[in-house]
Amino acid sequence: MRAETPSEVLFDFLKCDLQINNREAARILISDKPMGSKPAPRFRITEKTFLSRRVVHVVPGTDKIDPEMFTDFSQSVQNLAAAVKIGSASSPAAVNARQQAITAHALERMATSLEHWGLDGSILRNIFDRIAFTPGLKQSDRRLLELLALTVCGCLADPNAAASEVKDFAITQLAQTFGTLETTEIVQAQDTNHKVNEPPAKLGLLRLAKDGSALPPIYPLSLDPEGTVLGSFAHDRNSITNVGPDVSHRHLGVAFSNGTWLASGLHSTNGTVLVTRSGATTVIEKPRSLRSAGDEDKQIPIHDGDLLKLGSSTDFLVLKISSNVRALA
Image (cartoon, rainbow, N blue to C red; front, top):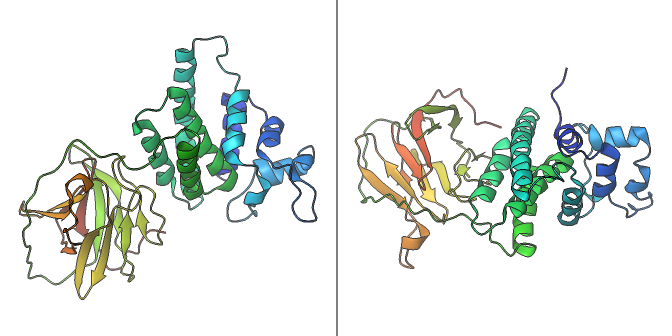
């Protein structure tokens, strides 16, 4: 039995949790505009085969997903929210708590489905983190943005498109920024040189929890010229998105050059600090609030046993790995 697809997660969530049946959800989401010489796809949702194969049970990588088949998500998600029937007789606080609980469950189902089909579920988790930490949002607006993220992922099987839609909606519809929040905790460090006589090795990064425990997997760093980008919504060919909420979209780059692994800041909001195996610290990039026009971009060598601290939420241990390990797809 195959794993559920993103579209199946979405429509099951809408049907079972929000009590919007498949045909009604499709009527809201599918465009009523003709596609070239073909009739508007909304007029075909009464066809059982079309509704099943082209809308509800779409298989990423096998079935063609046409973004033009869907109406403007910024409008359709508001129509979906208006059609939600749960808790209509309850207090607003109770309704919000119920919606938050079922949306959080849908998040994990959707992220797991994306990952099964070779897509980046971490980006969706990062969207939810960013929504949760954005100040000034009403709870109803948070639930709306979460529903938007789930809807775009389910319809398009594209977490990067979901990030773009949520950011645009927050700016244009809610008059909110969707950038990386500056943290109140700033790691203080002094620049230092790290010289190691051992030959360069292939390296990987292992995320650590706040208590120092490991959070697998190990992410191999790419030997490609463009290197690896760490960030909350990074979608470079080689990227690591398993990061905390105060990590920027494209926060840190690591590349192999002239026999040395080099880390460099990508103009992040909260900066990056390197802690060497001996405990010495080097500022790779200052937080934006501490940077000045005269600060130069740095490329700092990293080695086995070092610790990369991105903002205040995300630590990666640098590890020597087998040369046979390839970068994650």
